[in-house]
Length: 215
Image (cartoon, rainbow, N blue to C red; front, top):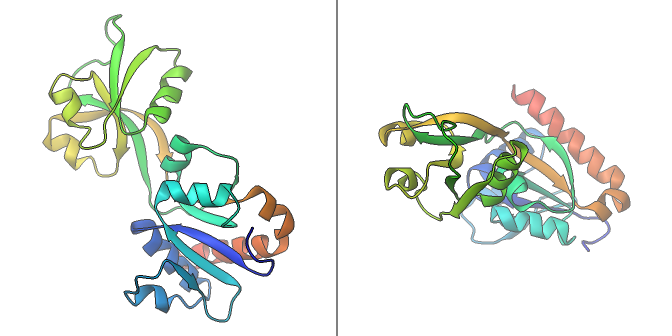
């Protein structure tokens, strides 16, 4: 567990990290050390009880779930794929994109009765989506450019994150259907929510106020 008087927050490295730091700054915190180019992974914010931990997205959930971090900022995509036992308390509204079912332009994905093959970096998201449709599909996990799968005939379609759609368009693909919207979320450890409820609620309110001020 984290120290009693400390709120330790795991931040997803990269774009979400940058946006979260901006939000913390708007909420009145000094985040200058994190912008100094330091290679440190744990930072104590000056004049506060907050520690920030920089981690990969999936690890943010692991650290929060196991209680070594009280809170985390992570994309809804990671939450949907990895799952876990924690509270999801706040939609931060940035890092917006969407999970989409995509395939070759102009094709009717639902035509015919054959069992379809879907390629994705997110097999659990894909499985849940088609389960709701009561459709049996074959799922192939792809680590790299998932757009290749339908182009090479490996899959009938893909489930992937779409932001602008430019990559799809340049490769003759298009979104067929939105699977789920995605944005950055705040998650909280189950025990921390009980033991540090007042501190967590106060910080959550500060973040909400920071979001309002940024509009």
